[in-house]
Amino acid sequence: MDRDEAAERTRTYLNETSELLRAVGDTCLDDIVVAAERIAGSFRAGGALLICGNGGSAADAQHLATEFVSTLTLDHPRPPMRAIALTTDTSLLTAIANDFGAERVFARQVDAIGRAGDVLLAISTSGNSANIVMAAERAAAGGLEVVSLTGRSGGKLAPLADVAIRIPSTITAHIQEAHLAVEQLIALIVERDLHPVPTRSD
Image (cartoon, rainbow, N blue to C red; front, side):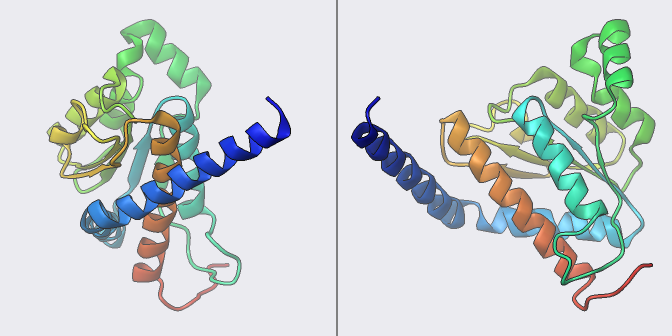
């Protein structure tokens, strides 16, 4: 690929990304706001946010949990919020996969950690990842609220969710980019709802 072709490919790709984010604003705005309200309500009541995903979505789970537990920006200090990525403990993940099957790596953690009133944020571009779907099923059975982040179809996951955010695309890379933007936005809305005024927790 020569430089001109690379430049054109770059321009096209970035235009597609910006167009999708505009479409997210048009089609997902209400669901994003409601998802943030549910998460803030759980935190306010002493609940926790559990987050799961595979591959790049596993990285998203860790990223978002970090934003809640650490901070979004140093110019708006506030107390940490109880967010847990279910994607980080390799000993636990491999043990569950070995003993019970890979489809249960998140569901078993939901059973162990989740409590009624908590929220599970389940991330799957297809909406059909077996381990994410099973986690959502267990969360619902345990009295947790379920927020899903998927692509256009929602797959099997969206119907299980109390709030389903469906990114209006079928292109995995663009869905993942939009997921990250939505996740950052949810963290910001929740933070400013619970802690509108910067406060030191140390």
